[in-house]
Image (cartoon, rainbow, N blue to C red):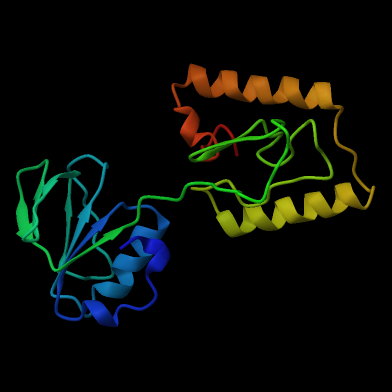
Length: 197
């Protein structure tokens, strides 16, 4: 299942569970499932040497990414470890999809990237009448969303003014250039990093 469909830990009682991903949803779900599951195995891109434990749970193990999953439930990891799992939860992020949105090409939605957006929110050609709140991830998301909402409200009420469309596009291009220089893949544009915060 995908983390989007996860609701409660009870279905995983006594099971061996593999959770793919160690982002916020993977971390939270592992915390909920661990007390009732037999074992929880986290598949993550984070390198070897993970030295933290989750609330003193000794039934959680961390592994590298999955190499192969077999029809009988056998899961092999790139680190050589294998386990026969009862359940697998994909905590691999979300793709943006706005089937109701028709911007005549002013906004492009590709997988995990909406562009061009000034400060991850305003499409320069359609601002301020269109804004996106909550696309960013990794940092303190609820604080970011609150600040974004306040900014949109102030722009719409006329208390704050956005730069011109041209100035916003220049800013967007500078942001893209900075990401490119730091070799950040474009599908991680909305993943806030310290230099963006």
